[in-house]
Length: 424
Image (cartoon, rainbow, N blue to C red):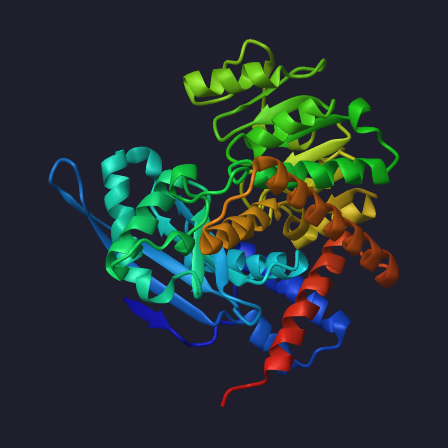
């Protein structure tokens, strides 16, 4: 296990460059000096580990995993664990930073963290993924725990992954530690409502954003890019609210229907085939067309960097609500702003997952679990309160919602830094 304590290099591309640009804008508006900016820009701790895997056929492969703890001035670190062939240390750094701002914006007493293993989970058996998870957990276990860092599911991981992580950590501690992770199965201390929490939060904010633009949700149209953990349920909840979801895509392709897609039917098709492609209730279209559809609402709910300088000018949606982390580059942000599009930033829009993760952690620490009605009511209250505060800040500062949200979050983290002081 190698701990990396050097300051992060100044040059970066992709999501990390985007995250740093957003932070720089916020610290400049807030009038912070360069020393405080550097503290907020630099992760507190990074770990890179090697993960040998004995495959089912007896051969051995080696993978690389990361865990970045960006900040824990406001509480223990919190963030997802993703399995993807595209995982890189800079990507994990960016996601950890965004997680810090997300927790602060929603007033959840956590700092930000993120983890990842560079692996394509679709190419490995469940037994192999379990061995990867257990080895990764054992390597990072000195740095995680209910009071230190609490992982959760992300791209390529799920509640089974969290069960393996919790069990591995618990075996090392000699007793069951339910609070070491969130997003677990209900029977292992998971929270009701956690699986759909991010999507519910996205839809709470999306409906409020539509209304703010004078668009009735039951008369609106929407397109959803991504049909995984977030996009699938976001499409379902939008349809249940009366919004006509006319286009959906996944990593394999896209389908559209002007009259609106039958979302329950599409879900059954995806469960049976693994993709939205071939759905009889819609026409196949290019995946990029989902981002450019003439709709009231666009929900990019897949990966970062899908709205860029080269395609933002073709986005026709009046409201863009970021279900994914970092789907809009700064250049695209400027183009969308000039075109009069309302962009609801990721650190607000997709914060439902961390809110209910917080609820799960509280329940696990108390050994007392809430009903699904209680969870969803408290989630809605938190999301809509944050929406109101970001809108008020945007009006007060005369800035876009992303800038307002980042400023609010950065200010709260900076205050925690300043009140705690420096040690030694």
